[in-house]
Length: 194
Image 1 (cartoon, rainbow, N blue to C red):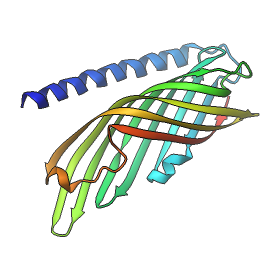
Image 2 (image 1 turned 120 degrees about the vertical axis):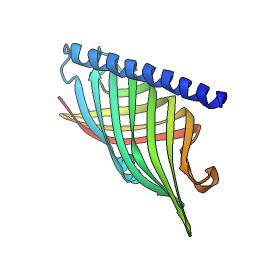
Image 3 (image 1 turned 45 degrees about the vertical axis):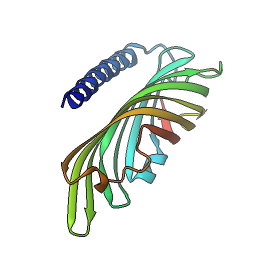
Image 4 (image 1 turned 30 degrees about the horizontal axis):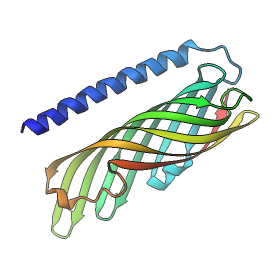
């Protein structure tokens, strides 16, 4: 019982830290308007493979760095387990190129919060649970600007703390697939800069 309480306290602390980081990123995004095409709104087509959608807002902080806030929803099935949920992923980006603002090769540390409702259906058995991932990671990528349009390729990894809260059934009823303590990340994004 004490272990579960410690997990809940740790997740609550991490969630509060993430909320503070998101608030800080929003303040920085709103407060910095000194650069030309300093805003990008885009979507990651890789999320379509997870039967979901995403939207990302990136704001230049100066000539070589930017802050990004990503939101996604997903509804996917892995084996007999149906996932439906959302995630919030704030990211800081450091662009190594001294070309245009928000373009070229970048390194991007990130944090993330993802939560899913799980439903596992097997003959004669329906199980339900809530699955939460809180983590941190790093993406590397490249962003190309073509007039007002942006194309981006990225790859990375996140290390997560996971929690499975079972409503009905047992842990063996659920297949979580690639959603685990280490999760690969991939991005193929298209967007509009302004």
